[in-house]
Image (tube, rainbow, N blue to C red; front, side):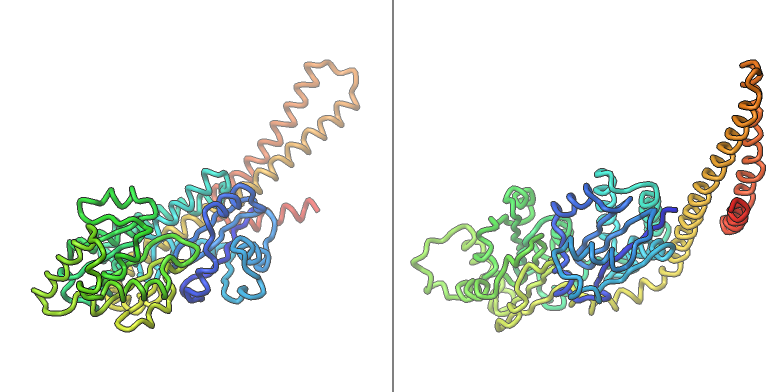
Length: 444
């Protein structure tokens, strides 16, 4: 019978320097889902976890599945196997329900993981990589999570990664209204980051690899071409990196050059023609000096929300520079965790209902398949016996031959109904399994 398995790594077992090696590009995921070696397959990859879920009619070992994930990421099994966890059967259901509900996240109860799982599931389903088992598992997880979000206040206590990043910004600058913020990457993470930043300042710059994406937000920020990012990075107080990339888009050397250039007095760069960005920054610096009496860029904060990381971590070595990556944000979680614990008990009750419902369905689904096999076996035996009888009566009229065949078939169906389907309907899956094992022992 079909069984579910999963293998993966998360922020709980591997730091970002390890996790970012298991970034799986979309084209690789698509190819894997189209040509899966398993009966069913789903690939989940976020900044905090890379997990592969399978369902198979054959047994799958931990080594086989972990090797598969390593191959997808182009990494050596021998070097990274120790960072993986592996689960099978009921444990997979418990795990994915907790992950989907955000109870396994850095920020407990965060909303973003639900959308990420939803996208991963829809992609796998549309490519024909999932079947009955994974479809039911992920549909149940998504449904249960939505119940938690509507029936408890857990999600109202916002604690997603952009929220934590915003808390870090506020800790560093208590005068954010007088600071400039530069967001690189305007996907789901960057867009949510923008919503938080907008509440505290209007001095916002942003870039996207496709300039048109940044221009869509021109009413609330100053769009900057991606290739001009260093001209802004060198002058901003806060830089938030949310771009999808396989190699760093911000290096220490270039960042340091940009920082030095951006902090030069106006007289040092008088010969260079002023562009629109220069004028905006001059106005900003004047505003900061007027309100706070400090240099606009005497201190800088870089928050790197990418996985793989968008910047070289060594930029944190630059004087006056504070560098924060996803792993660092976990230190802030405790503030919101206390408030969330009040709602956690109610959420876990709903979660248990969802898990129990899926496990019951899964057991009944397996029982149903076994029942169908036994019923089919009964029918085949009846047909074989009727054929033996009819071969011994070659002169029997065709009408009578048909009547005898139908009598055997009806008898087999009645036995299946009385001793299989009724047993299934009136007993727990575990008891039905015992009954079926007894039947199998008799057949042997």
